Length: 256
Ligand SMILES: C[S@@+](CC[C@H](N)C(=O)[O-])C[C@H]1O[C@@H](n2cnc3c(N)ncnc32)[C@H](O)[C@@H]1O
Image 1 (tube, protein in one colour):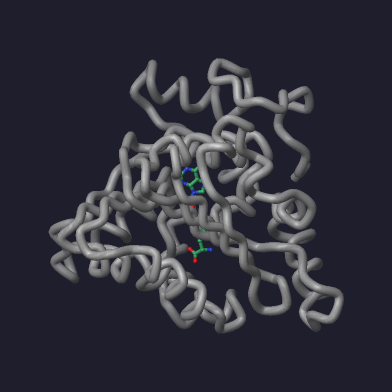
Image 2 (spheres, protein in one colour; image 1 turned 30 degrees about the vertical axis):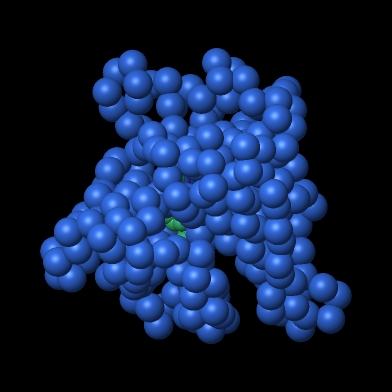
């Protein structure tokens, strides 16, 4: 799969009517009331998020732990720390394991909305909601490039950006920021360029090259730099990295 942006002439600024794949699919969803699974998700990630067997294989916390080199607890806790009881929370793509449940429990009685584009992921999420009787968890089908309208106190992107092409990164980041209420925050947890001494460097570079080609962009570019300058200015940004730089957490607090 070619990891270049889907439209090579994609402009620096976010133009809502532009002809990126993200925008075309968002438009299709609005106009024709159908939500196609994005091309990159079909071509690159069917084995992980779309095929009928994926939940049986991946939807277990111990599997998530292994994929994240046992940093799952620390990464997930760092997001949960940003959420207070009663907060309005939004996450535009679901996560395997118990993270979605933890998030709904932490924010309760605040409404937690989680959307996804993959039918099997929505099915899994609904099953978890039933099992845990989570009355404050709302599950919607949506393309993350066209998020469910807020406002929210906390908007979370958890390991989503490294899985999407460049035009999706722009659309997701900018539109997620738009849904954050003044005083609220957007939290992005994702991969990052490792320090030279991180021993997993060659392994993770190989995994990115083999399975996750959109990761490399996050090694080179700051998440804040995907936001348009006016949006960037409306937020105060803090960044931290962990596990030898493999993971980053960005908190963008809306100040205006
Ligand atoms: C958040 S990401 C990765 C999280 C992490 N690797 C895990 O353990 O689940 C995975 C989810 O993103 C969803 N996804 C990917 N692209 C999407 C898009 N454009 N719109 C909505 N959901 C999307 C997939 O269907 C999948 O459920």
